[in-house]
Amino acid sequence: MSYIVSPILKGGKEVDSNGVVKHIYAQRVLTPTEYMAIYEASQKWENQVRLDLCLLTAGRYSELREFQVNRQWFEIDHNALHVKEHKKERLKRGIKDRYIHLSRKGVDMVKVFVNSGFTLSNYAAMQANLIRWSQRANVSDEGLSIKCMRKTYESWLIATYPEKTLAILQSTGHTQAVSMEHYANLPFTEKDLQLMKPYVEGWL
Image (cartoon, rainbow, N blue to C red; front, side):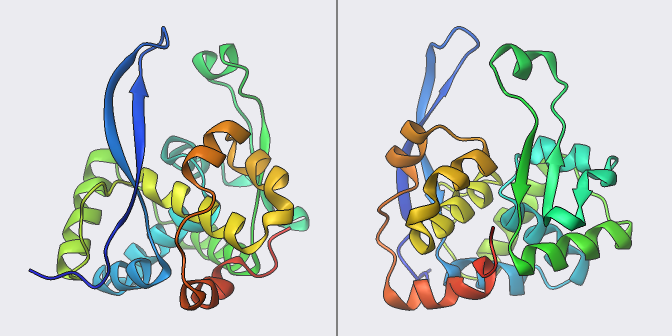
């Protein structure tokens, strides 16, 4: 089977609570063409809303699952989600409340999600759906996971607004070291940059 584009892969690693590396793996960053193909292949409108929620917030999937029962986190006056951290393990690691800033398309999408009553399935089910949709779309599933949505959007934002890198990192909750290693300076084409525009316009 041939794929529409060669995947952008970056090295990644999983560490345990003591900071010991458990294994190294490939992390995927999607191009706009890949994302749009997967989006169309998901077919149902509710699936497309869920995909856009994962992409356009660049939120952790666990945070988005919490958001679905804390929809007051959406602060429309600030064009942002106010993620209110309360998990002890994250607080111990110094992760605090943060604002996830949204593009114009992101604001519209979150409004739809909040008003629709849609919910997000557990991680394993969403992961299985994503793989199935990518195969249907003829997009390589190498290194593909739900986490790719977060990494992808951060990369699109940095590629479009390099002068806003610090604000982007604060919004996504990543450190500068992590972002520079994995999500900056990726081989996006001029066509990619043009296709990103509707997704990132109006961000902050």
